[in-house]
Image 1 (cartoon, helix red, strand yellow):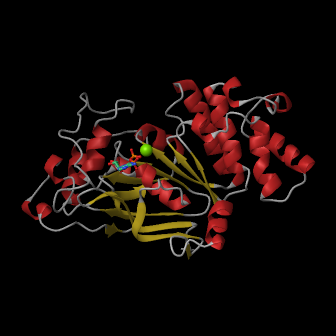
Image 2 (cartoon, rainbow, N blue to C red):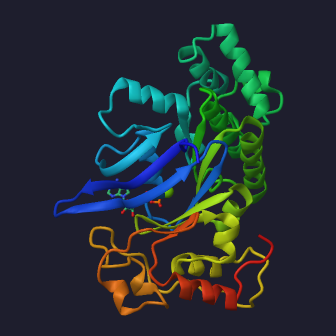
Image 3 (spheres, rainbow, N blue to C red):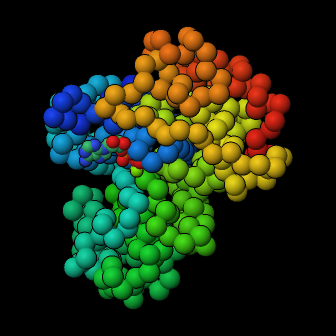
Length: 335
Ligand SMILES: Nc1ncnc2c1ncn2[C@@H]1O[C@H](COP(=O)(O)OP(=O)(O)O)[C@@H](O)[C@H]1O
Ligand SMILES: [Mg+2]
């Protein structure tokens, strides 16, 4: 296979604490191929946002990358931090945040915010930048763009604002867009429209997408591949179809069994017992073992590496048991 557009290997992000450190991300590994959409799913606090922020170089001041690599087009952007790497990141990758209002400048017309990258970075003239902004506004489904160009963020609805944010993300012609729960703040109908928009951008422009969500149904709708995060680690990767049909990590199975939205073959929903661990002192061995119904003595000893199973991966020693349970009581049909 060719060099992936993005390759994250054993990424570690830590926050120093008064006593010790908190590893917000502690073993995130995943690839994104050109033109592909990868979904990252995991409960709140599992390190999804920090992983994305580390990729674009926008970590909070208190956090630092403590290990691992982030390669964009084969170049490790975590080393050195020079201007050249910042430029590579800025030109290749952009990020769409969960809450559109925080990503927008409240006192600047939205059209000018979209025109900024074409004007400054791509060296388009004033007229050219404005035309490019109008074109992007049409592309993301903003009707009557020349009127909306003059609007301030507070004059737009939540869905319109998120479209503006996506237009800004597209404005530097990136190859990869990182979307951090971009529809969580929106109501269901608008959420659906934004998901369709992202899928269309992927199909029509060939842009790659990393889509973070705590909602498996959203990922099934938008992505070809999935990475499941638990307690700072990627615990399973694979295509959406294979992971949903036959999960190879008990956490993935538990997540799938807790989703109410799928066309289910079973008649009860289960919530995952217990709660995620304190990342300042995670359990020994497999981090999920205190909540796992397949746990065996060897799960509690040493850290579990990501195990390759053909094109998929799992961080579970007993993935066969998990797959057998999924086959015995299918989780999802129609994926
Ligand atoms: N500013 C911060 N200071 C200390 N710890 C933080 C900070 N922000 C996040 N964390 C820790 O990092 C972990 C991962 O956070 P985050 O990436 O935002 O999770 P997610 O996006 O999956 O909900 C959290 O569980 C929290 O413990
Ligand atoms: Mg988050």
